[in-house]
Image (tube, rainbow, N blue to C red; front, side, top):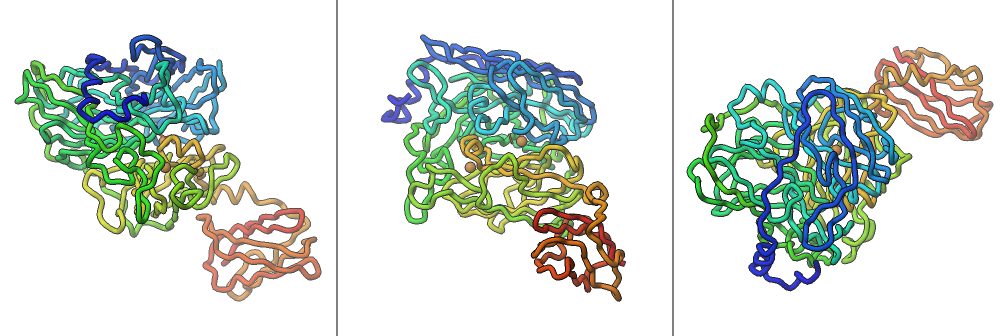
Length: 573
Ligand code: C2O
Ligand code: CU
Ligand code: CU
């Protein structure tokens, strides 16, 4: 709504109150092990006049909250009735790539998809949303997104509010942009309408006691800086992948797209009063989408995302109206919650480096695409093969002028440091999204314990959906080299490898029978680490590789000749 550009924040609130306040809807629930999700087109009356075309799951917009128990085997039917191909991804959950709902696992219009998996995750707040390449933003912004709440015994044993819709509420915070016919504009850098649970200017009656909120930033780009009026303190009890070890007191909590946080607010002393959940975006540092100047150049602020009336101002998201307490309220929060021990740095076998850059440098960089390691998403290229059970440190350097929320599928990770400094306590739990500021380097550690050799890859990407759709995404597979070597050994009747096994006395491998002038070769160990590589010119159809000094063990040799490639398992004794 372009007319709001010149409004001051005060007028802006007045304008909002003209629409009247709306009771916050709480999504329905589905519990158990069978879930039926119907993706459908819908309409919502956001404004007077024309209805807004939307998309939803089992309804007009958003979708039911799915309650799952850890270790249950769940069976989900996703029926696509939106007249467009899409996918559904279980964001944050540890499932095989084939069940993960990434861009390869498309559901055509009129078709169904039936993922089945064991819930391996800790109690926490996860979410589901479409993930079709180049259309994620559209399908999410039109309204397909829902919560997944995982329960487990560890969480159940704690005295925490957990009665859904009574003292435990899901809140998805988003901003959208509407045209003059009340239709949602995607993509947009003028998302100027804040909403919670797809409701503009909402209020919620809460009991005068400890109340838990499961927050999700479901926006396509915006970072929120959440806080309560009067700087009232609230407690964060969980992050992306479940409970934190201890509640953390906050007056502000920054949340980037894709991130979840569970918080508890104590309303005990506030009966009859109201209090506002705000985004204090005036306090966001520049270089973040949502701050006054989203783009940070070296010497200057960059244009690109600025003409947005919500950037850099404090705005209201939700009003809490405190009413009578319930009969058995939770009065005190436990001092400690869980005892989750992060992976330690010396467990890591591999370090991987990721660098974010703009596709074009200079003052116009925010209007272009962003690359990861100089690459753009390509459905046909697997960017990383990760050995099964590998513990890895990922170093992610943002060399662009805007902060990117990095997200990885399959795993939860632990943040080691931000520019070398220990992260704040609220970021020390299990995470699957982390905001990386301009010119910042973040390191995290994670482990790839399951789901090797799947038929489709996993994604890693920026969770600003505009960036993701434009290709700021790569893919990886988890590979079990032990079984893979067995699978890939080709019975080379032409090419001979001699001797095999090799030994320290006999460390020259002769390869013969190659019809080519030049070959390239690579030798991998069982973890998929490259041990030796080289190029040789061929004489008499053969060449030699000196493997002296190599550790005893099994290796896979790959050879690229003119018209063929060869692989063979080699043993060094
Ligand atoms: Cu929430 Cu790959 O996505
Ligand atoms: Cu995800
Ligand atoms: Cu990005």
